[in-house]
Image 1 (cartoon, one colour):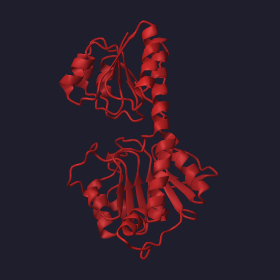
Image 2 (image 1 turned 30 degrees about the horizontal axis):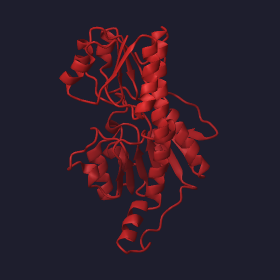
Image 3 (image 1 turned 30 degrees about the vertical axis):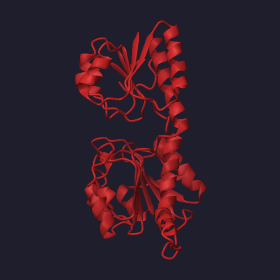
Image 4 (image 1 turned 135 degrees about the vertical axis):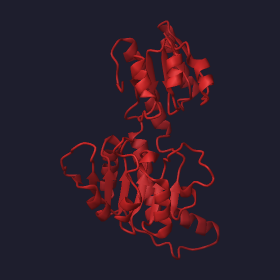
Length: 315
């Protein structure tokens, strides 16, 4: 089969070559391209592919329809909202993802966001570089705080484990599916969670139910000393409402890795100018270890598909 990779997997060339050689030894062809989000460029690269590999590059229906031989789309990402799944399904194209590759990476950056906000690390760094002192920068400890998780899939559960190890208690809202209380987590309605949590951390996918979930009214339920962390998906949060809440002191700060558009962000994006806001350019998943895990998963997906047994099935 003709296998085409349309963007980097974030691994060294020698590692990619080792995977490619295994496929080529089985009689398949493997071609990789640098990322190009322009539709016609994607079609030129992919039109003869039997198997397409992407990461978080948008894959539109127009491209899928143009690939007449396409049988399988292998997505090197957990979320698949950037792929036109309806067109894939209509064209009889199977889709798999790389679920689980970034669980540790995202959970660790979530924890880092919490600690940076609690201990005023960005402000302390700036003060020290400017010849200042710790005056006005007394922080707070994670121990003894209440962390509220919205979404308790694999990443949410890993965050729960990490903050529990620091001595925090964990409450959660998982309105997307019913889950019973555990020794680690107490589930409750969203409003109750928002009123109790010192830190609210988002770990849910984008669905019709979760899109725009965090807006002005929801933010008003939070403590004025509370922080919001979003390592999930940008559209879960209304960015304008969040920026206004931060600037008005409705909440104390935010750590944001995902936005309604992929970085680079426009210079006037409200969260680039809101008070006590730490922003990172959708980098939570990006560690050396997670990239290697991801490559292993997606090439294993291909091996399974070639053997007639699809793994990590989305469509």
